[in-house]
Image (cartoon, rainbow, N blue to C red; front, side, top):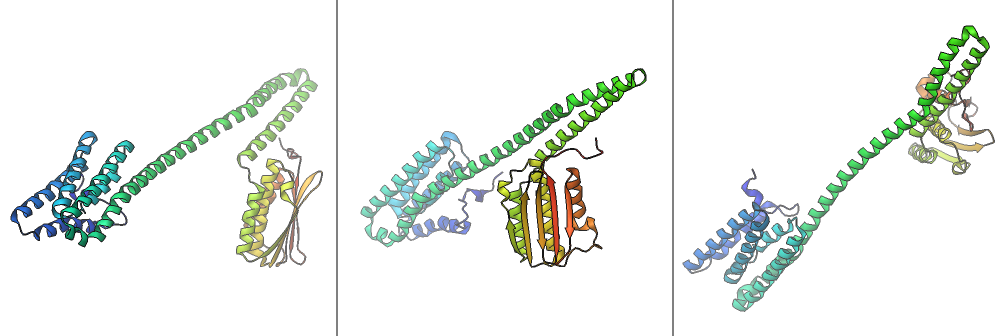
Length: 375
């Protein structure tokens, strides 16, 4: 259940205390009237206005427009009889919270028109009173014109933002679902047929091992060959799933070196290398490990990164003028172990030199094949 004070317009720029003052001010205007009849009429109009405002706050559809129209009539009466136009701000804020576009523009236009017309007639009825309040009346008219539209636009923008966030979440869910389906299809297409073939050939080899050993050996060789192809395809699939772009990693490396106040130089155009996905991923991860070691352990002032490519492999050179490589350092701790494991996975190589600093020479073959001695 909503509290009574929630019927007051809420806005981040205007305190609730300002609205309380707007509620009290009409009584101050009316008490200064000499006639008891005028005071009674004024108090009655004010109470009717706030009652209408309360009902409009808790009404929907047609009743809502009825109570808003009643508020406009009371605004006109308060303006013409007592020169009090400020209650129209309550109505303006309420109209700004309309959800229906047609209803908003109709009530918005009517409210502006009735407010301005009543003020104009007010100048003819009591010129002295309205002249004394002209600055405040101008502010009120500006509020009646601008506030509803700004509130309506803000609410609509928030609604669209909410819908956009919901749509983005749904799209993300669909992307994840589609990616899972794609991975399932790729695994099925990659492994399903070959594993079935391996199973069939294994059964055949087991039957031939006593009857025809030579044929059994041939079947075992074909099983090994099929398993090697399957392993290669799985590696390529995994590399596509976990691909790391070299240009993105290089941008992060530049930021790391700049933050560590290490001057760097990059030789060779990595964009012209046209590397396979797996090669690019391994090279990017090795570059990350190498630069991390430079920043953490070398105490270097300069670092050089060089990319080269020949017919067989891509060579990445990382040189720094720091302390040099310390053989006593724990390899697992400085990341070189992980780098060697990645390179061994694709028959790559790493060489470390320690003369006038540290020189790391990383070679990645362009033609990715299975490891020697692996299935």
